[in-house]
Image (tube, rainbow, N blue to C red):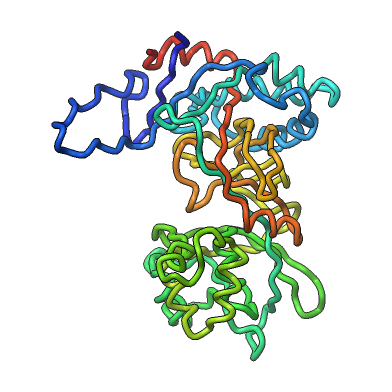
Length: 376
């Protein structure tokens, strides 16, 4: 039987190298089965197990990986790449990134096959997880408040003011602090900018600036689509970003109350240069950047994603973990960055497919995993 590598999140299992510890004894028959906490379990695989591997654009994947290498290069080589020991030390990734810089485009596939080994990611043995999408929205705004543009995008407040809930902020909790970065013309568009985490704002003179995530108020993200389903305003099978936006625009007298059920609030900063930037601090690549739960996966790790697009077409390609998000929770969970424009918005708004992932780890890390972690 193939070994199963159990990788606990740091908060769930502090002694990673010692394994995850024993399970509780079975409950009596009249008590419900306990729900196991999320746990990343890696099963060794081969590239021949991955459907579509040979036909991907490995050159594009390598280009995205090299972008992440720029951020990895600035980290202490002796430090772990992430809180999970499964991701290895940063120094190991330095070596792989060094080799990647000299790989000719036509040898990109060979590079990944020689230097990496794929591991099927599971959540307590369950292979399937949820994969959604996000995009870079375009808003209309101004640097000056006026009758048209009067909904603020805020910079990060001082620590004592940063924790207000969405409702309190909308009702003026940050007024008078001079934190307004920009003013936009649509509160619903601003709400979705918070969900996406970054976007572009078109100013009255026609110029466009890019804004990106700078901080968050510390409150948990809540998907307001759930609220609309519970209110029987939108059917579950019809739920999408577009359906939520249409309802909010059609019900302005009730929109605030629904949006306030999501207490999470994002603060922004103006960005220069390529973008948008992901949580790793590098520019995102449409169709190649993946937002993940950083409690399980490290930024910069290549991830093969197999899922299905809203139109039923298969999505099989090598991506790179470069971002995270408030709704991305669990070891087999991800958000595809689709880029900007109408098609990206359409895909992101309707994307909600089951899928599987294979994590590519340097072969030396794979050897260390089998030697050091809890193996069954």
